[in-house]
Amino acid sequence: MEILLMGTGASDGIPALYGDSRVSRHAMECGGKDVRTRASALIDGKLKIDFGPDTLAQCIQHRLDPRAWETVVFTHSHEDHFAVSELQYSMIPFTTNEFCPYAILGNAAIVAKISDRYPDWPIENVETRSFQTYRAGAYEITPISSYHMIEEDSQNLIISDGLVKILYATDTGVWREHTWEFLAGVKLDALVIECTDGFVKSDYFGHMDIAQCVSTVSRLRDLGVLSSDAPVVTTHHSHLGNATHYELEAELGKHGIAVGFDGFRLKL
Image (cartoon, rainbow, N blue to C red; front, side, top):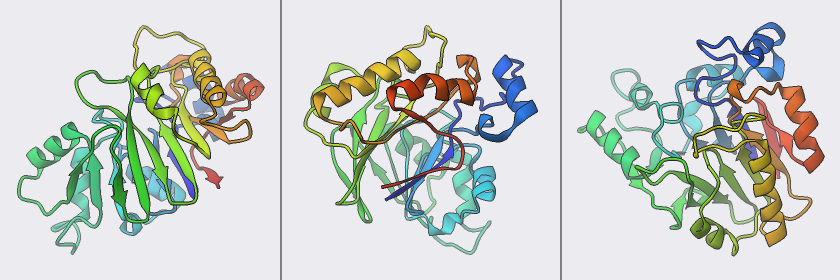
């Protein structure tokens, strides 16, 4: 299995669209790994996780062909993860495709918003619920409940190809106990996890800072869900976390956690 992090930024990216923070200025001046588009990922070139407003730019940057995607699975309906207006470009009149070329998996809010936007379009929607397992081509996907949106079933994703099992966990918040109880019976080979708030503790419950990220990874390792040598990579970084890529590496590296960047590839 290969996981490509197409984007690793939070809702307004880095440099932020209207931001003048220290981190945004640094990214604008230095470029490189400090430039982050909105978070999304691609597994084996086939399974797309989230479809945000930067998808076109990411496909161009990473030389990707969306026609190769077999499934798009959404974590939740926040706009930086779910650009519903972009889905239309996969079909007539924008292409010769009579049907959406990939199946779409998402929670009830995702399915409802797609159905409302495209009531008569030939799009295959599959509604997902946390702690239930779904088949998507060669993969089994088991959403787990994140603590990010209280108005919908916001999900993190356990993905298995039969040989390798990973957890893609962005927009997590600090998991509630029912999620921890479910995870106690899972063995993971790798973890991609958010670290949105960096060094800055936020009042919003739906994201994690560095301390919470480290604590979550430590608890997973203590439970045996994640072995001590299983790779852990971060994503979904905000400029408001007041941490450059180098500063994140210096802090998270102490705990055996790698810092993801746009274009990061993890092969398992």
